[in-house]
Length: 344
Image (cartoon, rainbow, N blue to C red; front, side, top):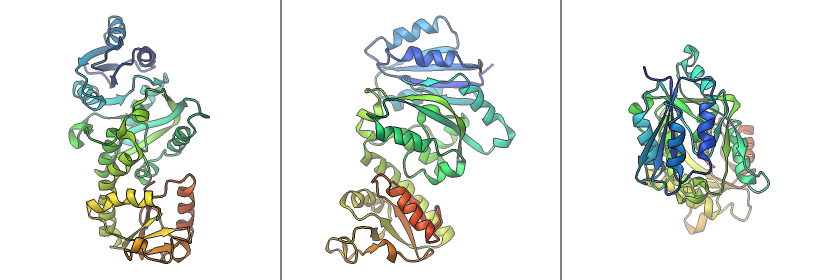
């Protein structure tokens, strides 16, 4: 009989941490699970460590694959999953004992039949002083609990921590698995599924310790560089703008932020058919004139048209700018998700 939950854990050169990750699954209060560890061609003792544990627990399966990367390893694990629900896990993180039970119970509840993915709050496992930016990101993630908050904030950054999710296995066949490319593959998956109408929620409790070791892929892989995130989100922002134009009327698109980096990041939208009619900026040196001799206007924030006349995209990445833009636009009567989208 298939297990209730399949846990998919890709691993590459994780001999120092994988025993703790596996132990955290074996310590779950829900015991009806299978753990599929996909060794992505490790050159250390990762496979040896896992094989020794597998001899003690028949619920653990070790798959040894060539080194094709985490995307291929995760997809391999998902093709072998037989559970009703699939949980992701990384080799350097730790699940709290109630994680699988709480998430499976949530998805199984008739009250949550419309939810396809459930995550949880996560504890930041790192040095806050040394990694203040990443710690702030975790704090932000933990504010997004409801499906509405997850969907509304999806263009800022990935709204869920990848190793904290559990989802209905059928979603992979319906909407596709991870796709390899020059972008963060987990973020692309969640954007694709959200665009397809998959609703995502979070349990309001910490159920995963999300560690931040020096070897973490998000710190060392160019696919997780800031520009890669902007490139990844551009087609999905464009699709959402087209959807809003159909449901709320066609409007000119203005980007909040006229700095060089902001314009470069927003320019990814143009390759997906989005015409940027103008920019908004708080710097008086940039406002009241055409941008770079192009004639594209730069408006001061106090001259932004009334709600319903334009649609605004917040693209400024400076710390605190997001809240400033949100407060300013909502104070003028703009509705987030209809009149403006936060994209940074």
